[in-house]
Amino acid sequence: FGAVLFTWEPAKLVQRFFPSCAVTQGQAQALAKSIFSHDDWQNFDAGRVSVHDLVARLHTRTQLPASVLHDMVAHIGPHLEPIPDAIEVLQQLRQQRDAGQDIKLFYLSNMPEPYARTLEQRHAFIQWFDGGIFSGDHKIIKPDAAIYRLATQQFGIAGQATVFIDDSLPNIEAARAHGWRAMHLPQPHALRTQLGNEIGL
Image 1 (tube, rainbow, N blue to C red):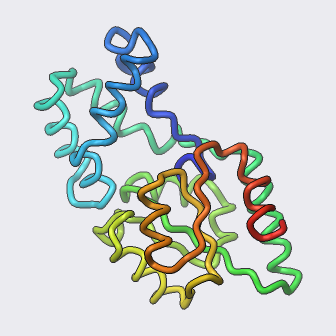
Image 2 (cartoon, rainbow, N blue to C red):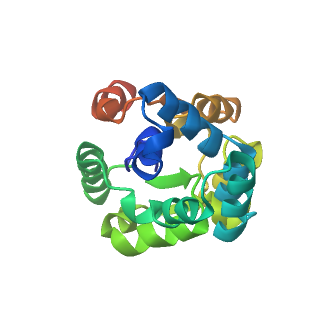
């Protein structure tokens, strides 16, 4: 979901909550990497640690104020906003499916349980999917091969009939190793063009 259907801009997040530590773009990117690319955050994504535990770990490691860390972590879910162009593409795929085309729509997202529940409550278009997996509900995350196996078993999808879209190259490589077609999307605005080239949208 992040950076494909919903905005995900870690550097802007840290600039908002820790402006004095992220004056330059380089500082913001480095701080964002130290928070969101660390095992602490991966374990949060996987549902292995709570918000409280994550904040404690981040505070110990970064020495950033715990209260501000909590404000940031607790409020990320409501700040994940749909990307309009991507939602239009999703709607087009939904319409094609509903018109009888052989299309199924599933999501496979690294998303902690609190954010997943927020998105489900706030955005009716999530019901357009035929099913989906949030990492926080299953205690495994991409690019762990186990989450791709789970999706295959749960949704009955297979091999080259599956087109997987992700902004993360390691997640793409894991999907390809699993036998799926995989489309790397480093920029969300390119979704329509890249998907059009992949499946003729």
